[in-house]
Image 1 (cartoon, each protein chain N blue to C red):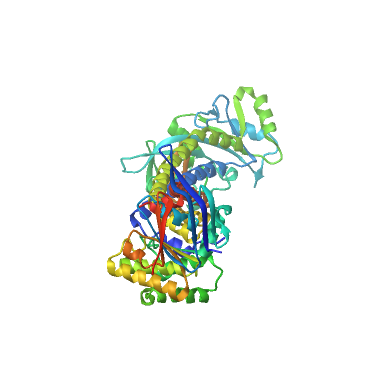
Image 2: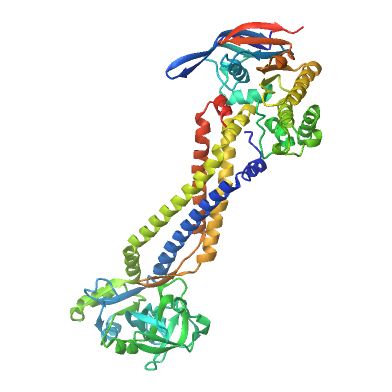
Length: 386
Length: 228
């Protein structure tokens, strides 16, 4: 098939610079919006997904409706559980049984008037056994009764503290001033946005004698074995859930938020895309006569349509891809707070592909709008248009 | 056999639910190598006939043979291909592509032909020389005068060495000096190359430059005058 040279097509974009720029801007905004929405969804999915392990189960209070913050179980449960359930993973003589207390508290650097809502987890040393993805990046583990805390990198960034300078800083958790003695990192997981402190200190702070849950890492036994334990000890009022199911249910819980983000971003992107497409179409609709001239010279209609499509595609994809890159540069790694902690916007291949896909959609709509008027006109009439 | 044969050629348009007979059983023959001016009042069917000869419009009924090809038998794409081989078309408003230089505008129809780059270059240079614009090859249309633009358009029409050169009021937008230059060019093409030319014009003086003037009235042949 004979077509117009690519170079001629590209040169066609140079005319009507105002409209070309408008179209480019529309595609750029649409691409940036779609990439950012994708990064938001990926970030949330990753945070909840990578926080779970298939071998871990969570024992919580019956009737807590699968909410760790609402759950309360007796402080002696971890010991009873450890003694009663066989097949729990052990390392250096320590059972992988981690009693934990989960609570949301206002967190602020000492002296600061504005507080952030932080996820605080009361833990024992066993926490590092059941959450091996957590790495101590700097400092040390907090001492019990010393008013010390371990901070996740994302939680520090959320209150505007440089993780590299955090050790030794004082923050206020709830009404309790504590010292940051270590910085932990757990890439992509909700733990990265948490504050960890000795469970006894948190229990004292909260004036309670219960813990929220027990996280158990199984090795040889199954969820059913732990379920059998909870059913045999009805007096403890326990429920058990696979950690994977817990985070899957959280993901499902946040489905309306994810859908809302996707719909709002898509609608905004659609508006930007249509703006860009109509600017392109307006630029091309002035070329009805030129298209008819090309046809008179002997170029078949599909060659002219292809030329228009090519120009629209180059412009829209460049704009949308630039939008994706720009969004990545501006928002990549940006922290988003949600009730389960924090996640960061994850720009990956999917978000960039979505940006480029948005560009393709803009190009197709623009090309369709552009050739619509010309296609409907007989050539002699198209030659008479001004 | 004539290069162009129109037999009982009709072209109707629907206007306000009523059929308008723009060409009404027109019989006309145009010989190879001839230079014909089409004249007539507005709405007499001159441009419609030119468009039918170029294959950019279709007759409602009748027969139209151009160089032995029955244009009614060709589909849209075949007509485009046929046009690229057989027709050079000169418009009243030049219709050059504004972002292409004079050279590139002239080269445009050659892109539809299987030619080497060297051959294409040779033909473009030759076409530009034939219209005395070889030195302006790098200029964009907006950098040329109206007369120069029309000469580039003529070079574009000639570069494929078409069987038939069609021109729709080629001097309609030019002053007398430039119009004369274009007409001199047409005369030279006709005399020196034996180029078949069919030209629509309203101007008697321009029409007198042709060998033969065909007058249309209400879509019918009114008379044919042969220049002495």
